[in-house]
Each structure stands twice: as C-alpha cells, then as structure tokens.
Amino acid sequence: MSHTVTDLRAIAAAGGGMILNARGFTTTDLRAIAASANSGGGLVTLRNVAGVTATDLRAIAASGGGRVVFDFVS
Image (tube, rainbow, N blue to C red):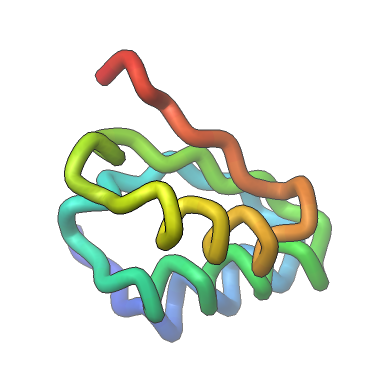
C-alpha cells in the first residue's frame, strides 16, 4: 500500500516514526515530511540516499531539526 506525501506528513506530525526510500520522493517532499516530524516528534529514517546531494541532505536535516536519520549503508 502506498501513501501520499500528505499522509506521511500527517503521520509524522502526529508523532509517528517511519523508514522511507529517498528515491521515491523529491527533496521538497522529504523536507516537508522532515518538518512535520520535527513539529510532531516523529523520527524519519531515509534509506537509499546515495543519489541525494550533500546540499539537499543538509536542507532535509535542517528541516527535520534532529528528527531525521540518513542510512548511508543501504
């Protein structure tokens, strides 16, 4: 089952944690989800981040305010 970015933002804003494949989202989407996690206290783990630039990773991290984990192993 696939969920929309709006769904994921609502879940993160409610305090839900999640593991996401970064390849399936734009940087703008990931920043929005991270910001929702920041406001709601959820934790977001992003896998498959090899194709995301360091600049974009910094922007996502800043939006998440410490609520984002990047999995560089997968």
